Amino acid sequence: MERHWKISDTEFETKFTNNTFKPLWFTHEAHLRLAWIYITKYGKEIAFKKYSEQLKAFADKYNADGKYNATVTYASIEIMHKYIQNSNAYDFQDFIKEFSKLKTNFKEIITSFYSGNIFTSKEAKQQILQPDLKSFNE
Image 1: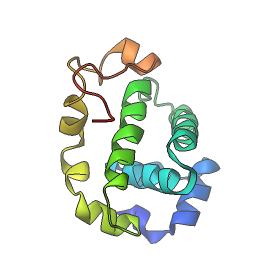
Image 2 (image 1 turned 45 degrees about the vertical axis):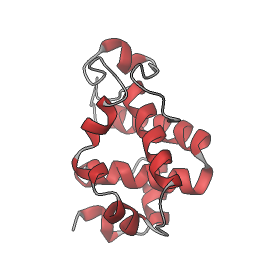
Image 3 (image 1 turned 120 degrees about the vertical axis):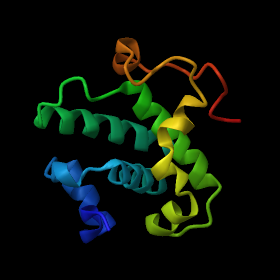
Image 4 (image 1 turned 30 degrees about the horizontal axis):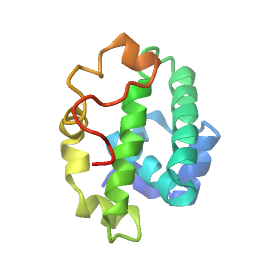
């Protein structure tokens, strides 16, 4: 079990909001959990705003220049929202069990929407690029 499970969703959100979350705890699964918390609590639009602002602040605090990617952040919220809408889960643990491919094949899921490499593109890091292969609403 990953370390972020030692704290509740409320404490997780508080620590991330206050930029006191432990960097070693912020794994891919923790990214997904944060997105799930925000989307289920605030809705997709507010979730994206909070998620992106706080990821930038987190990256700045830990001198992770170039780590924040606007397009990947946007795509992550859109994809998570789509899966949440199709979920029967009441909490993140059940959700990630239901859709384990989010944990194991997330990059593959994102690349099904984009033809270019948005993970290394300077433009994609700086501004949101819309998908060119298929819409998030499909």
